[in-house]
Image 1: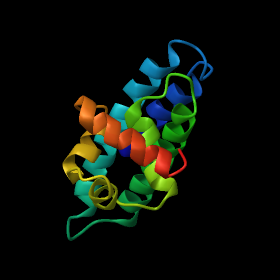
Image 2: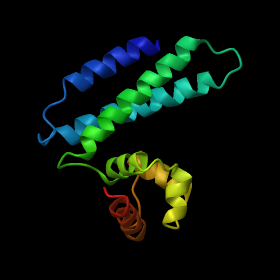
Image 3: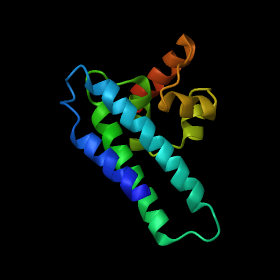
Image 4: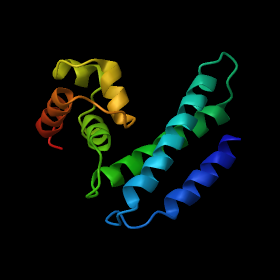
Length: 136
């Protein structure tokens, strides 16, 4: 099942327009949301006691595609705060908890912003400061 889903997402990624196209942010966002769900399902399956290597390989593949798409999206003109945060945090090798502690925010807020949930103006300002401090 995961292989079929990844095939579908890979085809959708390959069909994305140029990163400068006005449709790119929305279309990439839809794919990223789907990949987050698939990753969550595979992560849950990987946490079971009798997991097979194929589940771990599938989870790794989903995470790699997610990271690649986030990296591309974060460098486009329509990049979201969540995309820019995810890439800056990843490059700095910081966990969501570490990043949150660095700017006085909650771990779940960092995770929510990276999943495209809204933040308050103050939270957004702190996150932008973190991204700038990390060189993003």
